Amino acid sequence: MSIRTQLAIWYSAVFALALMLFGVGVYAIVSLTLIQQVDATLEESASVIASRSAGGFQDGERVIRLPELDIFRAVFVEAIGIDGQILASSMISFTQHLDPEVIKTMRDKPVAEQHPIFTIAHHAKAPPIRVYTYPLVGQKSGQLFGYLQVATSLEHVNRATRGLLITLLSVGAIGLIVSSVAGAALARRAMLPVERITGAAMEIYRTQDLDRRVDVRANDEVGRLGLAFNEMLDRLGDLFRSQQRFVADVSHEMRTPLTVIRGNVDLLRAMGCADRESLDAISSEADRMTRLVSDLLLLSQADAGMLPMHCKPVDLAPLVTAVARSGNIVADGRVSVQAFVTGELVVHGDADRIKQVLLNLVENAIKHTPDGGAVRLAGTSTDAGMVLLSVSDTGVGIPEEDLPHVFERFYRVDKSRSRAHGGAGLGLAIAKSIIEAHGGDIEVQSAVGAGTTFNVWLPSYQPNLV
Image (cartoon, rainbow, N blue to C red; front, top):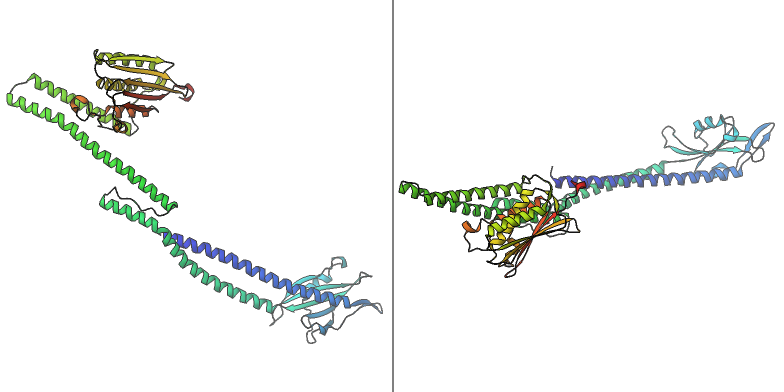
């Protein structure tokens, strides 16, 4: 069952329930009001008759003197003695009690428990009547002289309630039909934006055009769904383009060493002997391919959240010193690498991975710093519970337009440098993945001609939180 049909059914069901409750309420109120009006008429008539009646004793027997009963045209009146005999009646041909059952019940009660009561009586082939039974008790003597029964037909009440019921049912049926049609129309209108989103999604699927977007026309729940869908498409488009670029870069990186290897193998085959220079070239390119595959594997593990690390409390002060010492060996006197450590530099992480990041940053700084320049490796603790590691150089700097992309895979600022000598452009991407896996962050600050600074932020070691 479609959501549109479900909405229409729910709308009709709720409206039908509201109509039913409204109808029951109206019917109950009208019926109660009509009965109350009948009861008020009977009570008023009984009060008038009782006020004009008098009870006494004659020859030792109780007698009741009643007014003329035939003046009460709107009601039926009967005066009944305590022995159950009808003493007077406004209906000449009527010889039964208006409600005999209530007379039997009241005659068995003491005088103190005699109270007026309303009942409904049924007689053969006649509409039901509303009966008000009123005990006639002497005001001075306090003795019971008989009963007064005043009644009226409920035919007009029943006729009015039947008419009301027919009207409510007719109006309810018409209202239910109208609400069903309106519910179906509203449900269809409410689902139109969803159908547009569905159509756009299917069109994108068929055409594989990730640049298409859903037309969002309202700022409601469906509109927010459309915005979320568009944001998802933006993300998918970026990932797809990144994948395409990644595959192209990997293909390019792999093609170069494979071409070198194939050329040297062909040369060796043509020469018929092993040439040392060719073997060195093959070995170098094979090593480069091995490093490239290892870096790609490391990045894929980081993307999947499965980067292998052995975390424990690590004091970074000796690690910073060791990296600076290794940097001086790599620089071979061409650039000066200095280390500065202040404060306690204890973090919870993998020492080898952190050292890998610092070595990469220091080697990059050495490569891009002219002879006689300096590379500064510093570590300090902050009041915010973080450890800051920074690598600064006095090199050529990075253009402003390249800064947002330096951590992208295969991105190289110096486009003119050969990848065989300048690397594959994966080092900073790997560094960022490692630092983020430690719960830290890495950023770059640079200006052309003013040098570059990479800042690495790592959370300080908190024994109670590990």
